[in-house]
Image (cartoon, rainbow, N blue to C red; front, side):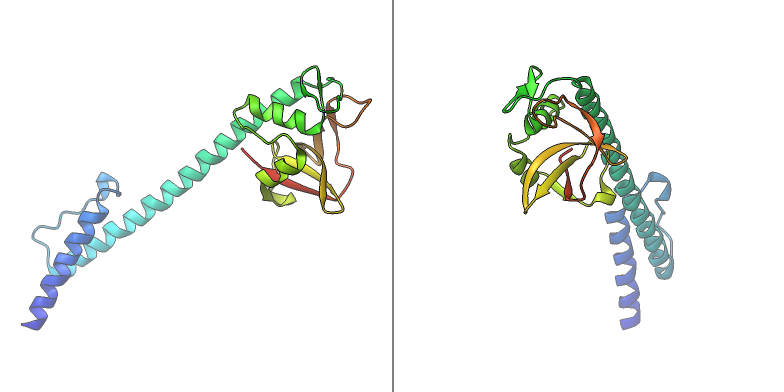
Length: 188
C-alpha cells in the first residue's frame, strides 16, 4: 500500500512539475500525461523540466545577445558623435561645441545618446562600472590616473586609442593611450 501511495505521489509530482514547467517550455515540448504509468510520468516531467532548463538558458543567451547588441548600437552613436566633434578647441571648463575640456567632452557626447554623466572626471570614474583593460570595448570611458586620482578622461576608440579633448592649445582628436596608469569604465 505504501508503495502504491508513493507511486501516486510521484505521478502527482510529475504532473505538478509539468504544469509549472509548461508555461516556460515551447509548445512542442509539452508531453501528454494521461494514461501514462508512474515511471512514465516522472520521465515525461523530467523531459519537460529539461526542455524548460534549455529554454531558460536559451533566453539568457538571447538577453545577453540583445544587451550586447544594445551596447554596440549605443557605442557606435557615442563614437559617431565624438568623431563629429574632432577639431573643436580645448577650453577649460568647456562643455559645448564652442570648446571642451576632457570631462565636458565626455559628458556632452554621452548626454547626446541618452546617458547623463557627472561633470567632473573623478565623479565620472565613480559613476562608471569599472572594467578590466581586456574587457574594454569601443565606447567605454578611459580614466587617466596619477597618485590615485583621476586627472583626465576620454572615450575608448579601440586599439589602445582614446578620443578626447587633450589640453589647452590642442583640439578634440584621437591619439594613442600614452600611459599604463589608466582604468576603464562602462556606462552604456
